[in-house]
Structure formats: structure tokens, C-alpha cells
Image (cartoon, rainbow, N blue to C red; front, top):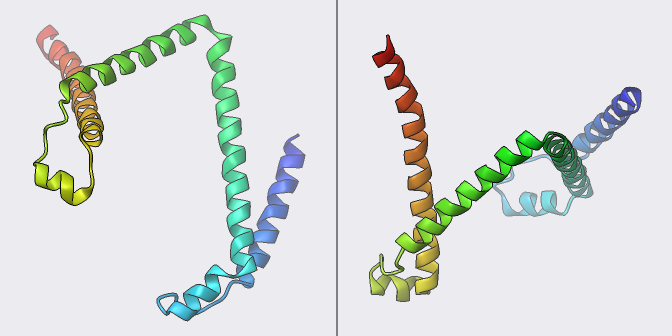
Length: 149
């Protein structure tokens, strides 16, 4: 399997090098050159290769993560507690956000609704709560170490 992966990576590298050679050259700040680069078959092929490789990496990472997660019940239990804790923080943030945080003129200028403002407020409160939890989890053990010595 390792030899197949190495051969595939060598082939992908050679194809990418060939495509790199066929890329248009020039100053991409000039609209005509930028349009030529955007319409280039070599550029499109390189993007396709990139998307395929990213897709493979995501699938492999998710597969092994889920495989390891379901192989040990303790890690599955910890993961479920973490997800539930996060959902609890989001629910608390949603109820803290009232949707009236912005000036009404801003809402009309930006075509934003009260629901949109409430969602933004939920995100901000979620970030602030998680940041506070992170700081507390870093400070408390340090203080315990200082006091314990």
C-alpha cells in the first residue's frame, strides 16, 4: 500500500510540475492577464488536483478519527460530554442574546433582521464564554501549583 501511495504522489507531482510550466506568466494585476489565467486549462486542472487531494485528506482524517472514537467507549463518552457542553454554551448564548443590540438605523442600512442580529449576538456570547472557560482552565491549575508549593 505504501508503494502505491508513493507512486501516486510521484505521478501527481510530475503532472503538477507539467501544469505549472503551462501556466500563463505575467502581471496578474492587469485584467487581461488575470482573465487569461482564470481561463487557463492548466490552472483549472491544478485546482481540480488540489480539490481532490483536500477531499482525500478530509475523508481519511474523518475515517481514522471516527474509527478511533468508536473503538474505545471512554473516548466516545468524553466526546459526547464535550459536544453536549458546547451545545449547552450555545443555548445559554442564544438566550443571553436579545437581538436588540444594534441601532435600528444600522438594521435598515444593512438589510439585517432582528434574527440576524440575534445569531450574531449568539456567536459573540459563545466566543466570550468559551474564551472565559479557556482562561479559567489555564489560570486555575497554575494558581493551584503556586499555592501547593
